Image 1: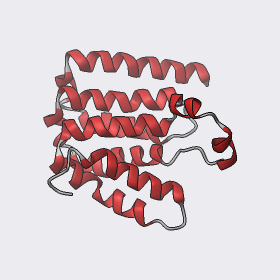
Image 2: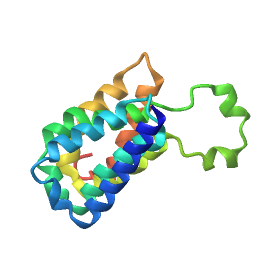
Image 3: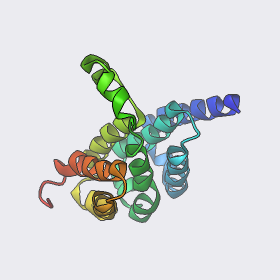
Amino acid sequence: MQNSEDDGKQALQSLIELTQSYPEIWEDVIQKLVFVCSDVMKTASFDNATRQTALELVSTLAEQSAKMLRAQQDTLKQHFFPAIFIMLTEVEDNMADWLAEEEADVHGKEGISDVASEALERLADQLGEKTMVACSSHLIMEGCAKADSWQYRQAGFVFLGMISEACEKHF
């Protein structure tokens, strides 16, 4: 199983390199690409590096050809941004361990939620306000209102914070 995942991660890395040079190759299959990357991102049983690489592939596509990705609002709304939201909920749950850590150690960590929040800010800059608000406002509202889970509330507020600069006219 690990070899298959390593091969998959390597393939995703190769696709990132290809996307950096030739983003137009995805024009006819972009919906499938976003769907597959979203599935990888949501699957917690995959290694975080594999999930991060799937996120990076779509982020790279946004940087290289934002217009093409903006045209896929339904796929972004139904699959991609919910996958990022799931990644944002995967935070340290043990308060005692968190309190015991040195401040420098906490800032040096790069968990999957940290990677997702950084990518979200990049995506907001590339995709713009209209696309971000149209594709993610429902997630923010649901996340912030989910009273039974602090992880979902936090993810909602982080999501809002990471896109707020790019969406300042709306908010």
